Length: 92
Image (cartoon, rainbow, N blue to C red; front, side, top):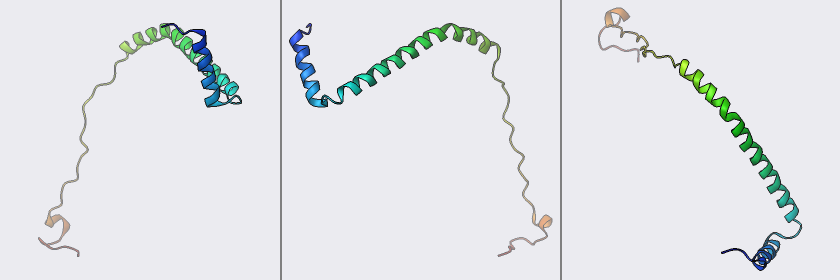
């Protein structure tokens, strides 16, 4: 269904009633700025596409380092002979 001119007119009147006349220019300005930013970002993404392919070739050459996990040395438990205390005694 193609919008007829009177459909667009009714839509504009409803928008005018909802948002009010003073706010419409500011809203249109903000929408225009947003579209301008969006278009520039899309253009940047399209321009960056060939550069990313070159980076992929470099990434394939530089592989991440592989290694093994080394456990930290744990201190051995001290026996009663090493601490100088008899079995079962505490400092409490």
